[in-house]
Amino acid sequence: MRDSSSPSAHPITAHWKKFLVIGLIGLGVSWFFAFQGMLEHNHRPLLSVLVGGLFWVSVLIGLLMLTMITRVFDAGWAPVIRRSWELVLPALPLVLLLSVVPMALLPKFRHLLWDWTDASHLLPNGHEVGHDPILQAKSWFLNENFFLGRILGYVFILGGLVWALRKWSFAQDTDRTAGHTHRLHAISAVGIPLGAVTLTMLAFDCLMALSYHWFSTMYGVWFFALSIRLALAFTVIITYRLSHGGWLDGIFNQAHRHVLGCLMLAFTVFWAYISFSQYFLIYTANIPEETYWYNIREFDSITGLKNQWWSVSMYLIFGFFLLPFLILLFYRTKIIAGRLLSVAGLIFFGGLVDLWFNAVPRQIADKSGPEGFIVAPFLTPHLFLDLAALLGFGGIVIAVFLRGASRHETIPVHDPRILESINYHE
Image 1 (tube, rainbow, N blue to C red):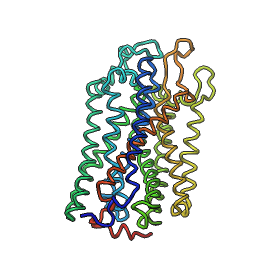
Image 2: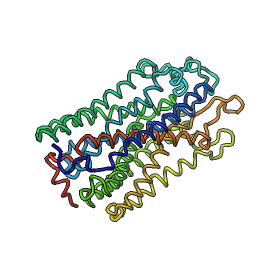
Image 3: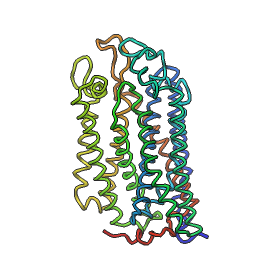
Image 4: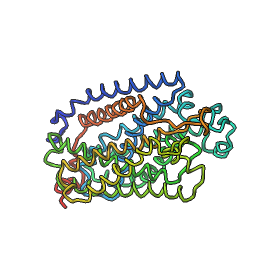
């Protein structure tokens, strides 16, 4: 029998169908143009689907890691917030199934997006991918069968972790057994390293392999830092809404905001540290197979002057790192709901730009230029497809969240630390 925290008492959950419609429309538009692009051998519409899907995948992976981390550390502030994470987590394997999986399974999509899977693809040096010695040296990892197996493995591993964490957490709502908490600790202790390896390999396969000549051993850590930043920003946004007329009204307090603000500051610094370290090490080593990735994002191959992507990189430095960092240094930013919400919005948008910056620029073979290639520009008509994919997958995520809230308890009233969480103070 449900108590006063029953989700049926909150009319906000009734809007899940509206978000589902928005999501389906956005995905329909995105995939329609992706198929059109395939017929025209244009990879850019497919990149829109990839970036939109991976953006929400990164948010959800961050939420999954935060769920397990707060379980392992038995964080007393977390239970009232963690239940909202658990409600939205089923969207993680779903978004993967709607984005990355069909791209990997369908050969024409796969060959168009990941050059190394198409042996006849022409490289800027005039050679075909099938005769590329760099790919041949990496063939133990970059081969299509292993690639497809890994992509499907990510769905099963992440989906399995989500299932296990939700099963025992929701079971505690009905049988009131504290032993479920111990099971969840054990699952999280195993799930954290497993999730870390999975998100690292996912970043390698879906993003780093878009330019398969390039490599960075720090790429998985960058993706982890980005995912946690986005997850925290998402948490601030949804808790703001749910504490104003939702099921967290009167429960989510200033101390909870302070914790989230402190974590946002910490991972803003961590993201900057990893991003700078990667750039600094590649710049110092000055190896052509590594430096070209940054060169095409900074310089025009013909004139040697700064290109369009240079301004995007400057935004990431000053808009995605420095501005949130400086604002979050102030105590009042962390405790005043409106200010923290504004910073969360900055980080949410900046995270999308960061993923876009990593995925979209690429060398396109063009014999008319002296370098034999051109760099894909960012000011293109396809920007509306980026927005459509973002809204499409976002609509699905919010629909899953609200649908889950209408079927399960929104406050884990039998969690051993629920009273500590509700009465949490600085």
